Image (cartoon, rainbow, N blue to C red; front, side):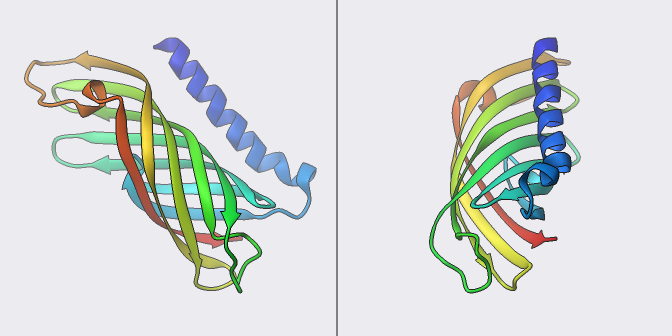
Length: 175
């Protein structure tokens, strides 16, 4: 489990450094802020760095209810493929792939897992700076670890099924 945390930390640091210092290397690309809801992103906030028709993104999500607390962290790559928009040079149809880390905890267990997420989606520009997006796809389990605190925690679909659907709806703002 310690090697997974080191890998996750390294991936997160690489994405953050790329976003923070990328403008010195790539010139006129743009920074985008995003917020949304989906699975496995839950309620999320993210930062994307645009490189022509592609984006590198980092997002942090959470879901909290009376029984379970879930945190998600993702590093993703967007490739804008097709279509046109009067309000942006960025193509609206995209493919999105990345690594998602999920941590969930209840009174019965603590779960940690890594997933490979793959989606197709579309952006709809509402202005030159603001828009909405929707995407869907599948995610594939890469690793899974669970610590049982007490027996009787119910079903664990992440441990049973290695492929799950994923989707997201969100807003973005170009800085």
